Image (cartoon, rainbow, N blue to C red; front, side):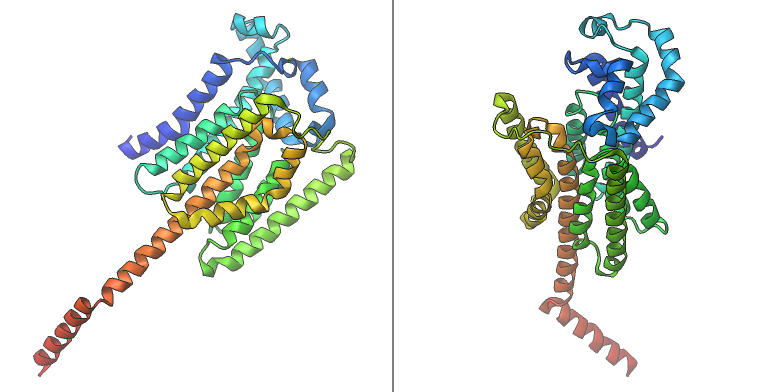
Length: 355
């Protein structure tokens, strides 16, 4: 294995996998443990807003049906300290949520690495490592859908920018799966709109088609879910803005700090990409208002999808600006008086030689 392949393996496999393992088997929060038993899992995810988030729950149940019995047989009541915090813990179900989350995290890591590949110098690794750390650490409560939703969102961004022959069809399928996973897939449409102005002009027509496909896939899937499962449960259950206490305020401040950090790392000190960040958050206003009204800003994990698309879009803008600047500088040098004199001298010498 050469050094580049080894570095990529370390960043996209070892780093996220070990971080995920440490978080969920080394650090174990003693709250929301009701979902770690079969009865609690079913009661939570079969009702309310969670009943629309089908794919992650179905995957966890499928993995549990395959690995759960073996996990319960070999793991038993280990590690014992986890059972002290959650006596009702189903080790097979917990492992199934861990596996689905880990597989989704690895997809996110691979897509982010490819999307951020052109960031110059060490800033690429810094931005990538910060994003993976945010994705992992904000998922300290393991759920069936969080990591899968991030994976579908980042994969959508990758397909928007891909020039592959079947990328449009793949994008439509990913948006459908993402919408069946969590409502945050709507942010892929924000990504599609902003990136339309960042891709090459000759690709904007194809990009516009992709945006139309993604929009249709999201709207049809979302409305179909509501029509078939009912409209009773909304994303905002109660208006609790301003009634969340110190923890919510600290979480909101943390999200702002992380957003600024991501902006700085992604822009490569190019201030011209600020408009991309501002436009992204402006188009995401309905999402942000929903979080604010429902008091959900206390959960940084709900800001994480925005941070992911912000990083990719700002990086794309910074890369395009750098490429344009390099092309302009090369053209300017070709047209400089010194080069024009040299070109004239070469032309004169060629004329003399021809005579």
